[in-house]
Amino acid sequence: MRIAIAQCNPTIGDFADNRARILNATRQARDHGAELVVFPELAVCGYPPMDLLDQRTFLEENQKSLRRLQRELPDDIAVAVGFVDANREASGKPLQNTVAVLHQGRIIHTQAKTLLPTYDVFDEARYFEPAPARQPFTLHGVSVGIAICEDIWWETPPTPGERYPIDPVKELVDAGAELLLVPSASPFFAGKRAVREDLARRIANLNRLPVVYCNTVGGNDSLIFDGYSFAVAADGEVIARAPGFEEHVLVLDLTPARADSPANELHPAVHPLVRRGNPPRPEDRYPEIEKALVLGIRDYLAKSGFTRVHFGLSGGIDSAVVAVLAVRAVGRENVHAFLLPSHYSSAGSITDSEELCRNLGIEYTELAIEDIYQAFTDKLEPVFAGYEPDLTEENIQARVRGTLLMAYSNKFGSLVLTTGNKSELATGYCTLYGDMAGALAVIGDLFKTEVYELAEALNRDREVIPPSIISKPPSAELRPNQTDQDSLPPYDELDAVLYCYIIENLTSAQIIDRGFSRELVDRTLRLVARAEYKRRQTPPVLKVSPRAFGTGRRVPIARSIYENSS
Figure (tube, one colour):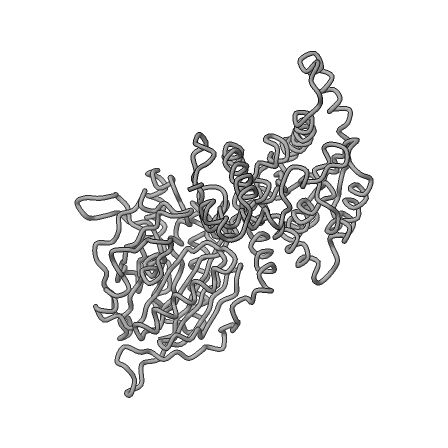
């Protein structure tokens, strides 16, 4: 059987556009002789629809769109596409996350999702009822099973200690499935592609059947979907891969088993349209992260109805990296930078920012903030009489800058990109309504040390970020001779502790056992706990790690600051 994998970029709730993408990809697949085309999970409505599933009109449009596809799709190709279906059982949630197989104007098979994830960014059990049964269907003499995304994760528990009570793949194989389709909406994090492929290879090897994995692509709010769809032969070899971070139709042949092979084995032959590739090597991590962040920015704007972005350019590494990513996402003509110096800003910060803008070919405006800052402090002088300047005055500077950036946003419909990193968000080394003010936190899921490594990667082909920006000691420049290490531990030590605590979810005792000092660990964890109220007010953070701030990490604000310290 010739199969097409159509990784597409749906917009949540844009049923007409999503339907057009499905129709176009199906026609392309058919033109290349495919007999079956597989689309991602919930491709009809987009993923994740969240509380839009509570709206009757959304559900009605979802059903109407599926019926239109049923009428408009070509008759000579079967189409497996994800949509929201009604739960027809007498009890349980009213909806199911379902894949329908459409052929010759009829729905010849449906399979609902069984394993509904409720960890990290997922909350599917809030909306959907799991499938009561799992059965393959027959197409052109081949028994085909459908396991939707999480349904293949029984083999590898997605979170430590978790084990699902049902193995959907085993049930499908026991029922005679010879081929496994995996429509998916699996969000990106660095290294996720290898995780998916390893899992699919184990399933193929264990069950002696090919696995066809179709992942969605595109940015939806903080989530980025990388695509990287693939097919695995019955012997566990990855025989076809789609490119990452773009829509693509991948075509391959799965021929009937040889007489001397196990009865349920199909032998794949790669179609000439297939693009071959290898999983990213460690040194390719940051180019992959760059592609993810660029796609995240681009789709955040496009799907929200905006075209332009701007930000404050400080002369530091964070804003420089955001500037480069913004230009690569939406084009230099849609990017504007603001230089917002105070009397604490060094001359080098201004000249470095100007050089960066010239390298990128973007317009910039310099708006000195000293007179505005002075007006604030003069107004507050009667209230602050007798008190020495402190963090209060530093934050006023940041908030003046935030006000100017937001004013430009209001006047011209341009979105503010914030430039804070994960280390700053973790420790609270950021100012509410100041540098945290904006629409999207582009590098909020990259630790400071990772920002430096990404900057080096961005300069790999051409020196865009001036070396002086990369080499200078990081500073907020809010008081004389300030550096970040006046308030924080050295970033290499800080980020190592933060990784253990946030990504690996280790206790302070476990982190100390890894060789970190108790003083460093206790200080870091106190900073993280005290900053939770700030993180609740940050813009959406583009997710590129296994655990980003936002919906994937839900921690109470009002709690003991010594939590997780046993």
